[in-house]
Length: 410
Image (cartoon, rainbow, N blue to C red; front, side):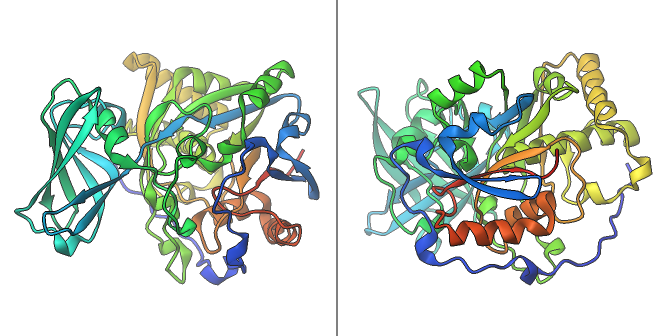
């Protein structure tokens, strides 16, 4: 397939800088998930509410789309005989499969791409060993560097009845974001997880969903607000700051997505206003549109969305949302698939035209981040007014912070 090139005017990193005082970063979660503040931006106007009342603020014909990924305790520590501590942070599986759901089920060893703390203390021929207690059995876990440059690490353990997800649950630590600047505690185990999390594989929480409770979800159902669940396994790249003066040169991280036939049918309902619960759900749905474009325009069945594909087509060349999603359904029918798995590096910044999402529930993000750019693309220049208002009204920021409901137009 001939690669399409996008011609985009430079975007200055400094345009998306704002001052975030350190004391405004929420380092602890509220005991009550739904007690967080909610900034409601609707058709250009700002109101201040509380998250527990969100069902009264959503349009009656809304379809809320959640990301049901589940955070794994991705930080695994070993101690060498010398006393040196080595931290292995799991990023994504490499072998025997790159499919996260299958990698978590492995029982005979696996290899992962990682980040490694104190790497200089870990020599290539050193095998790290740690004993774990799982199901009242002592398990010996071993780790070895397979490729130092790529930070590729192999794991093996001495009980073929134990899966890697059980190993991780026993050995790992909750991967709190680095800006919290603290060690996790017992309270973080349930709180850095949505109440609807299901599919293990994320190394960061889809934080917009942290405010939902079972009661709120029940209330939404009673008010005939439809909900749906897809999967994007959030990667550590979500915290990677933009260091390029021209943000377009920022290297976007790949994240694995899983979408069902039912998801696509639900998105095709023309009478529903589609609200993304979080930037990860939004990126997944918008990526779906571009996957349909690849099928229609290029005949390419590879579900891999490169970061600048949305900017490589002229508007008059593009199909409608319905045509794009129908192309995916037709492909799935032909291939006998009930779900599709792929990856996305989609980069959404000002100038992007949203194809599927009409509303967004999201927390308040770091300055000069890809997520600030996404919000600015969605609400336009008013993003700065929204953030200034949140700062003025003592909102809590970032992963454990307060929330916003953004509906730019009717």
